[in-house]
Length: 438
Image (cartoon, rainbow, N blue to C red):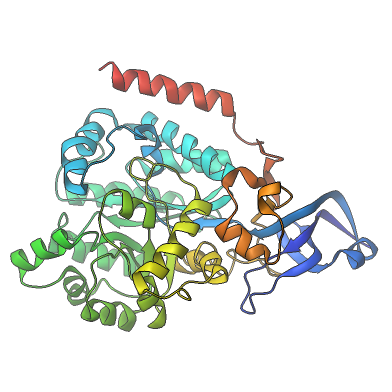
C-alpha cells in the first residue's frame, strides 16, 4: 500500500476534463499537494494508506472555482453606492471614496474579507485588479489561496501613484518580488481604453512581452464607452488595442458587452481571452456579453464576479447560474452554455485564461489538489438526476463544505481554517464606522 497525505472519497467526482466525466463513488488521492490518483472508492482503500481520509457521502468534488476578475479590497465598499449607472457610480462615488480611503491597510483588510468570502463560496484562485498589490499578496498568502494580481495603470493620480509611469514602476517592484511564485502571479492591469493613453499602453506591451506576463483590462464595458471612443479616436477600442499590439494570448479582456462582428473577429484572430462578469454588468445596466457567439468562434470565455462594490457578492455559484441563464436569453437559444460548459467556464476556462491550466482548473492526475466539495444531501437538491445540473442551477454557496488548495484544508465543514472569521467581521464593521462617520 502506498502512503499518502489525504484520501477524499465522495459520491461524485466531477473532474471537468475534456470528456466532461461524472465519476460515481470515486476517491482522490493526494500527496505533496498533488493529485496522484482518481479511482473508484472500492479500490482506493486497497491501494492507499492515508494520513487523513475524508469521506463525503452525498457530496460532489469539483475543481476549485477560478474567479478571473475582481477588486478584492472593494469588499469594504460593499453596498455603499448601489443602483447607479456605471460612470455615475465610478466618478461620483467610487473614485472619490478610493481617493480618501485606499491605503496599504485598507487593501490588506479588504482582501482578507474577500478571501474569507471566496473560500466559503468554493473559490480557490482569483484574479484581482487593485492598488497596493503587495498588500493583496500578503493577504492572499495568509488565506492560502492563489491569485493573479493585476496592478492598475491609469492616466490620472490615484492613492497609489501619481502618473502612469509611477503605477508601472511600483507594480514592477511587486512583480519582481513574486517572480515564479507558486501562488502569486503579478500582471499588468491598465484600467480601460478610455482612461489609459497610447504611450503607457505601448510601454505595458513591451514590458509584458519582456517578462512574459499577462495584461488584464476592462474593455467594451458599455455601449456608451465604445461610442465615446469612436467619436474621440475614430476607431473602436478593441481595434485600437489590436493596432497597438496588445491583443494576444496573454491579453484578458474584461466585460466585453458591446461587441460587433469586427470586434469578435479581432479577439478570435489574436487569441485573447474574455472575462465575463454577468451580475455586475446586470446591476450596472452595462450590457450583455454575447457568450454563445464568442464560444462558437473558439474564444476562451471565463467567469468573474467583479468587485463586491458592484455585484455585491463574490459568489461564483450564483455567478455561474446567472451566466448560464443569461447566455440562453442573449442567444435566444436554450442550448447555449449548458451546465457542463458553465462549470468549465468557472474552472478550467479561468485557469486557461490565467495561464495556470497546467496546474489547476480540473481534477486530473499531476495537477495541484485545488478542490471544492459541495453537499447535495439537502431537501432542496432532491431528486438528483445530474449532479452537474444541480451544481449550476440549484446549489448555493452555503452548500460548499470543504475547500483544499495544494491539498491543504482551507474550509473544514464550513469553518475557515486559515482565517479568523470573527476578527474579519469585526474589522469590516470598524471600517464601515470610519467611512460612515467621516
